Length: 119
Image 1 (tube, rainbow, N blue to C red):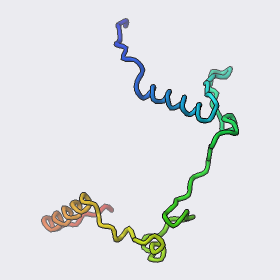
Image 2 (image 1 turned 135 degrees about the horizontal axis):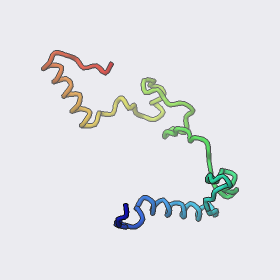
Image 3 (image 1 turned 120 degrees about the vertical axis):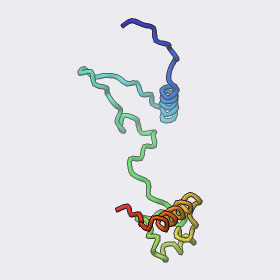
Image 4 (image 1 turned 30 degrees about the horizontal axis):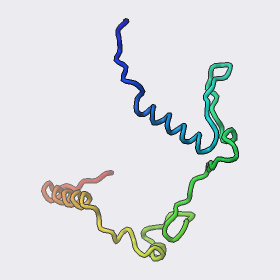
């Protein structure tokens, strides 16, 4: 088939991707120019190809609370762990939509006489 297709220009997601790549290249002082090898496969950059001036961290960041970085998440049922922070998430009131869902569930149980279970 041979028919004209309207040209709306570059998609905004592609334009944003190009802008982000340009900003990243400027930040680290290295330009990424994709190229293909002899087999036609794209040559992708590696962490060593970026250079020594970059701030690449390949490890996960620890979970940090107001008491500092913990090596394991605190158990919300452990009172001692929450004394460090000064409150327990179990003391925080539920959001309105959660309260409405709980109230709706209780009303449905009362009306139908059946309790809903996820299992």
